[in-house]
Length: 183
Length: 299
Image (cartoon, rainbow over all chains, first blue to last red; front, top):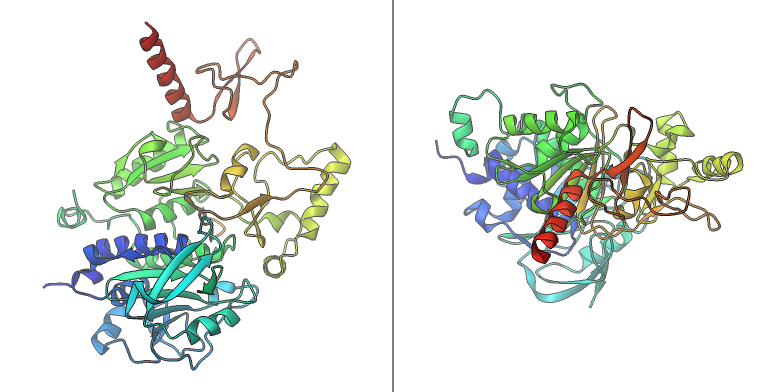
């Protein structure tokens, strides 16, 4: 049987290390091409993080039915799920879980698919933990309302949401501690 | 040997000992720990084939991070050769075929450490995992975990400051020699594991990611790179590290390599004499090598 690489443990370990890198250094773009074959970065990240313990919401219907079976994740509502798969070109029409003061880890991770990371018209200046001074990030295909809503959602640290943006092959993280200015 | 070959060779264990579900849970906790610097993320710490308290928290982090191309260094109190380090290294070698081990800080990609951060500054290409016995600095002032979680969320550390103040009143100085409470990114205060005060400044603006794992207490937390880490202190009583001065006020040197800017261990001989030696054995070896090189050059 030929198992797609993203479902294999060795590839998931490599994808996880790329996730660690991008969460540790927000704004640093990590290219997953060498690990994931023809799969998209979005599917590779989901395959790496999901199992029967995780709740996943798919408000924009971006996850194919066969993938749901392999991900094993519990389907949740976007307002309560720990992970939410999002089409970045759409406008936000829900408020994700922000966690509780005692348990901020319940704040959702938003996995947002966009057209391009590292190039594009949207230019962000980033600062905060993981960034030595400032870092610039260019994006294409992210509706700016996500950033405006995010600013509101992360305003009461430690509550907030963590964003992971994906294009076809690359990922970049914007955790709740990152200060973002649209330039 | 790669992972596939390892599996087909009939080994009963998966690469990294932990099953993939356990790894995924640790991995999700690690990412949240990095996203919320200093916050102790709870996780379902698995039973390991060694007693809790022997570094099982650090080990679960290491086994969830490690890949076949890893170069890993395992240290215990700065030494590559003490019991805890040797046993954990052997276990990792056994369960992760293909990984390389080293004693050289400069060569490794992943470090698992009990109670020290190496003297050589870590790089952005490295991750250090610290083994933590007691993750919560508030446990000395508040027995209820529920209340401690609220205090952490509100960044209410007044009772911890009172504890330090009581030290000053009784002893004229803060008596914590290790596990020094340190505020991360201006909010959460962490127990940075029993590293000496000497290592606390290395948490601040570190180039490497620092992960901390408490197996018995089932917590994972992190200090991301380039993040502010400030030891708790008072305006008029600043934080200070061990100074290793003798009675005459001279800085003691390592008896082996002569280094005068490293953290020293004290050894008492049978006759009662005290000698001092670098705690970081790789650092000490490096200093000796440098001295040897200089000697050869001048000869």
